[in-house]
Figure 1: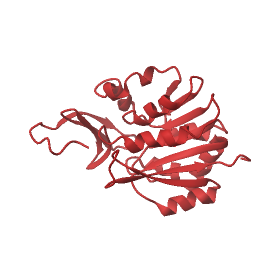
Figure 2 (figure 1 turned 60 degrees about the horizontal axis):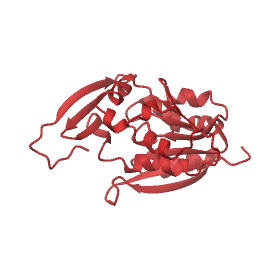
Figure 3 (figure 1 turned 30 degrees about the vertical axis):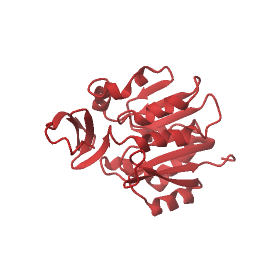
Figure 4 (figure 1 turned 120 degrees about the vertical axis):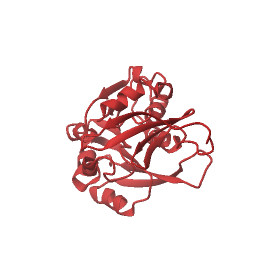
Length: 232
C-alpha cells in the first residue's frame, strides 16, 4: 500500500508487466513504498507483508523432514520466499514457479532490496512456468505447496489461476503432496465454499485469520492449511 499521508512525494510508475492472458501489472513507487497493482487492485505492497510471511511460517514450522521439498507459487515481493528460507534447514529445497518474467526482472532490479540475497540461496530453484504445471507432474514430490498467486481462490488477475482452486486442481495438489504434506493457501478474504471444497477433496483444513499489518486488526487475511493424511 502506498502511503497516503505522504502527499508531497509523487507516485511514480516504474514499470509494467504483461500477463499471459493479456492483463497488465504495474509497479508503482512513492518514496520508499512499492506497490504491484492490477487495475485498481493492489496485489502486494512492501508495507503489507505480515500475512505473506505467515503463509510460509505457519506451513514450514509443521515440517519435520530436514530435506523437505517446498513449492511456492509466485515470487511476489519475496516475503513468502524469505520467510521460508529463514526457517528451513540447509538440506531443504525450495522451488518457486513464476509465470511472469518481468517479476524476476523487478526482483533483481527496483525490488532487489526487498529480496536481499534470497535468489542466490543454494536451496532455491526458480522455474519460469505456471505453478499448476509444476503441481501436475509432481507425483507426491512435495512436503508443502504454498500458493499466493492471486488475491484469493479465484482468477482475478489470471483466469487460468481458477484451475488451481477448482476440484480437479485441488486433487492435483493433493496428489503432488507427500503423505502428511501441507497445502497452504493465502487469501485476502474468507471463502467458506472453498473450505468445503478442500474438505471434499480429503484435506484436513485449518483456517487461520492473520492481520494484514503486524499489530493491526482492521484488515484480516486468511490462510488455509490443508493437510494430506499420512495414509495418502
